[in-house]
Length: 310
Image 1: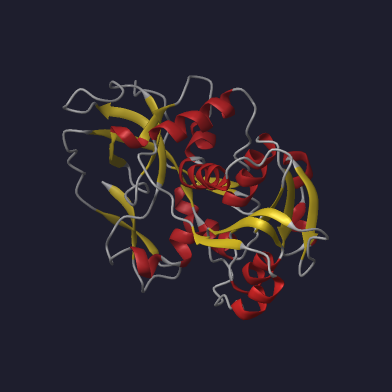
Image 2: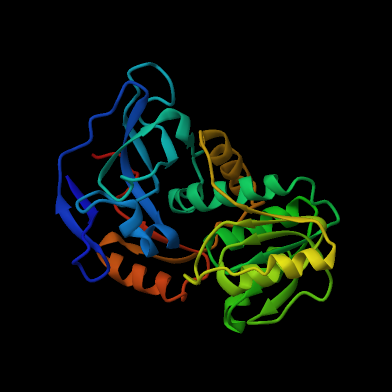
């Protein structure tokens, strides 16, 4: 079958290859992949996560062509969206039934397939903050895939969301998604914040940590800046304000979170913010645009149709 594999010598670190079809384990279904989405982190840090020749892709949506042997999960013919560490950018994917959710008829697979990695990350991060009802939450890197979903989910949970972006054009649409305030470039929040969902790292994270109120929590979710984060903890001690900083890690099983996100999508209560979409033959273009921060939200690749063969 055809797949997109990691090749450190390729222009974008990705190239097409012919590989063997996956052999599902008893708890896995085999999916004909219809759409797959790109995530900044899996591309920017591919050398840390993949071996040469390994198939890219955390997110993939499609149609079940072989149900799980143990009887778990959806039947053959079901439309699903899935999340796993690798293997999504291929014509077929084997994925555990605990890490997928059924996509209702009428819901676009491209939209549903854009949700798993970024959506589960944003959802679990908002949960980690605890109750945000009526509280100020700062989202850095708010224009990216995780950021735009975090803005929506935090606002939905009752937070006063402050969205931080690098350039003015990256802020387009964020107020409509629920951002009460928008910060551009080096601008800082005027008042302390209860929580920080940081997708950038470096100087922005250290400054955001300094803006936390008593008992506040900053979550380090991503590292788009690729800069070290330096915090003067002696200076922080002198402020007398107790606060916390945690590295955030998403955790499975992901099926329930994906199902919840798709429920919101089906009811027009969540927008996956697909900012680029095209055939997977244009993957180099999609990667270049995503890494150059020209895509607002998610980039989606179309691999096939979900219509049954005649």
